[in-house]
Length: 63
Image (cartoon, rainbow, N blue to C red; front, side):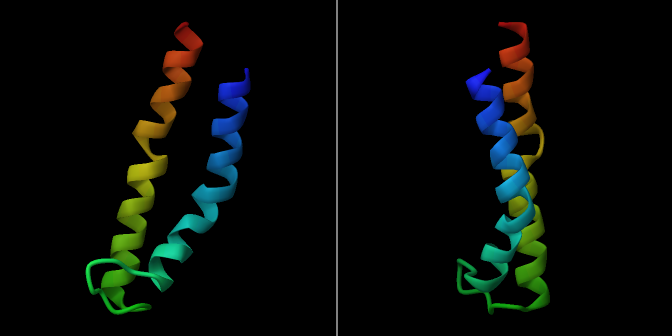
């Protein structure tokens, strides 16, 4: 139950504001607030909070 609660809190908090961090502080020399920064931020956020994050719910639910 603690694992699921922590994941849910992470999804609610960082799933909504993580993309803003990547738009303003872009890695790889991308110019902040550019179109490429927004594209990178949306893709990177889905990597963190897409299937890989929800897979933990599946594993925790089965166990």
